[in-house]
Length: 361
Ligand code: SAH
Ligand code: SF4
Figure 1 (tube, rainbow, N blue to C red):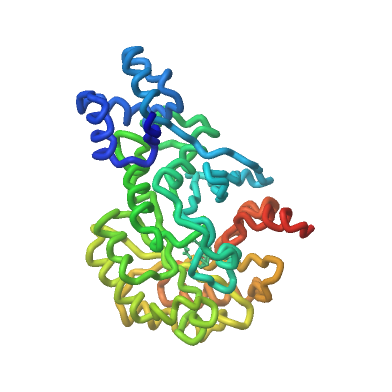
Figure 2 (cartoon, helix red, strand yellow):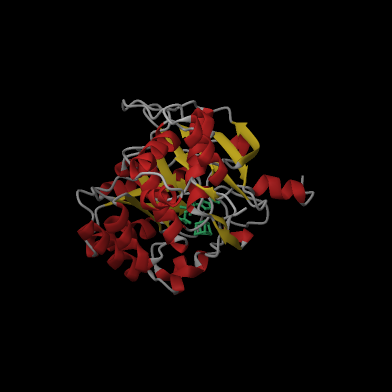
């Protein structure tokens, strides 16, 4: 018998082709899509408006799979973290961050990361492989299962209202699968997370930045972390390939292509004595002015991890940095680290389990 096809992660067109392959009419693909992504069905037997024969036929040809939940933790501030395992045993983490007026699911796109930023724990794990579109989409579906948010709520009040592609990996090193997954997640006849509520974060893989606007139409965040090439190259080796000026030009192109995009978010990790002077803040202002970028800064307190020598900036320095940017009209909130007691914060994902494996206490 031929191997069954996994339905999660197929584009609508691909699903239609699969349904046609088993000799069914196109409207059946619509129904199946609805069951998968609107109702959250994990079993063909749940698809109650399909005949028993058809349900059986589907089960004979296809699968619907969720990754295995290997571990999950909820922190004191209600941040929820899942360690998920795929069929080949590879693992990633997914995090849900509830806030007062919204809830954000942070999803991963790769196992490890090839960019190798010196401050990032994922970057120290090297790249193992890209996630498939199914693996990216199903991370969000696991979170929805947990909060029982099926069928897709029609109102705007959802626990899981936003998506950030800020987990493990560099999404623009896995463009095809990431874009495919985000198109599925934003499809109005399924999970229906509006593109305006999805943010893709990148370390600055220049050639693909404008496509985030034209192909996806979601929000863009750039991990900048350095105000000049000297500093940035030191902490983000990718800067030698794609220096700041190239990133700025790609952002200009993004702005041109993005209909009603109000601003681009620049993430800026504050590292004590390294990139957090007032002069650095002014360099950022100059950059944004020179390239006419509508920018918002997200100032991120550095999360230390074992084996990494950087220190977070003091509160005073962080505050002064933020004030300096604000003086020139830029929003520059200092991000509150969430889920610290369960290591759910940026750049720490999957670190504890690996240390456990290695016997580190
Ligand atoms: N690869 C993409 C998306 C994942 S990283 C990118 O780099 O944008 C998500 C965010 O976490 C990035 O802004 C990254 O710089 C930040 N981050 C990485 N390590 C961190 C650490 N130790 N402390 C705080 N933030 C960190
Ligand atoms: Fe990769 Fe992003 Fe970490 Fe850099 S910060 S190593 S790009 S995951």
